[in-house]
Amino acid sequence: MSSRLSFAVLAVSQGDASVAASAPLTAPVTASVDTLIIAGWAGRDRDAVEHHIAELAALGVRRPSTTPCFYRLAPALLSQDDAIDVVGQTSSGEAECVLVQSDAGLLVSVGSDHTDREVEAYGVTVSKQVCGKPVAREAWRFADVAAHWDQLELRSWVTRDGARHLYQEGTVAGLLSPQELMAKLGPDGLPAGAAMFCGTLAAIGGVAGGDVFEIELRDPVLGRAIRHRYATQALAIAD
Image (cartoon, rainbow, N blue to C red; front, side, top):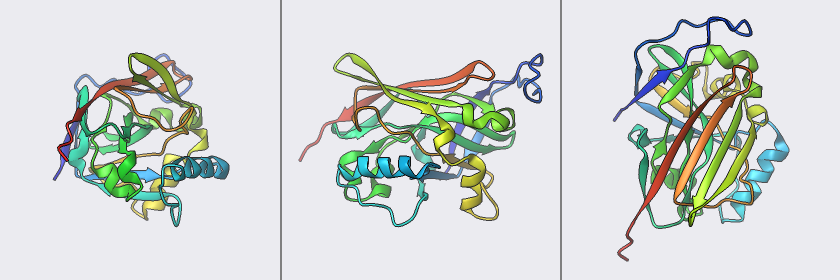
């Protein structure tokens, strides 16, 4: 079962000499996604990976046998809506770069690997499969940011009980690069029609959920950002 994503692809200004200029796209790019991959434990820095493993081990999550891990999920989980349904109050988001192999080429956006933390202690794949995967409605051409990829910045904020807190912040330099992740997928890299979440940063103050989650991917070189905001709507638990 596939999912359709629609992106406004933001082109590099023709007057910017820092990267190869891109022709502006006047119509949204629609990508039909039939493969969804979540890259887990994708840190480039071994210490950062261990920190994230310890962070989740505190919640009862088993250590991975190898890193990175590639979790295959249902593409129907992808959502560009302003809200997702969750079960109970035990889920939380994670800001991640998202690669999409589209007919217009390789695109990069920002998404949230929203995960049920209670279920995660039972099984990581299951915990990811039970939550929607929000993705922003804007994207960049990967070719426009590849040369300065490590300078891109991820941020997220969580709102709980009306109070908004910075939840994650840092550059992607501590994560494996898209080229490294795609090479580890296999000789064919990221196939056509695939979307891949590329790993996340440690949470400030520990993993925690909330009512609203905001994610941002910022490019300080070209002075632009992609943002998305979504609410979580908790379904009632009958048992």
